[in-house]
Image (cartoon, rainbow, N blue to C red; front, side, top):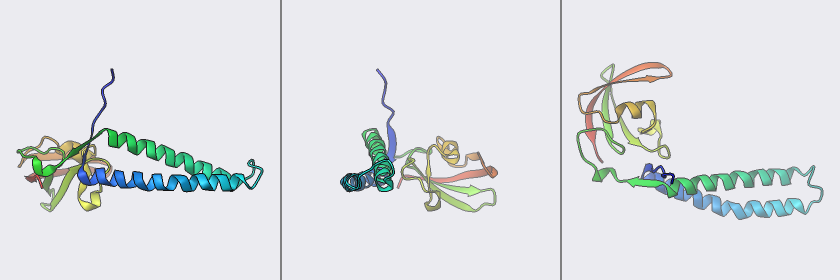
Length: 158
């Protein structure tokens, strides 16, 4: 029997997926109506509206299936219930870069990742390099622009 791989995410990421699923399920009947309306125009072989609506229907169904799969495998983690001295999923990590400039990231799932907002995926190069590290550990990470070096200055669970 195959094991189901759990998908760690924060509550905010879970809510984002639920909201997107609701939006798509509301859009689904509108697309079906558009298909029926386009079908009423006759010859389907050269009916651009029909083909566009059918394509959109396929996209919506695929997105719904993907989101439902992710929600069924979701492992919602509350960082405030975590503790310890190592970087784990959900931790907020304060770093000093090679210029001693402070940077802060929260380790999150792919759904909620947004580096500009300080949230990086646990699967990103930096996220993978930080998992398991402790305060004062040096971290080297290879990114497209080259190697980057950091020192872990603080770990929080907020």
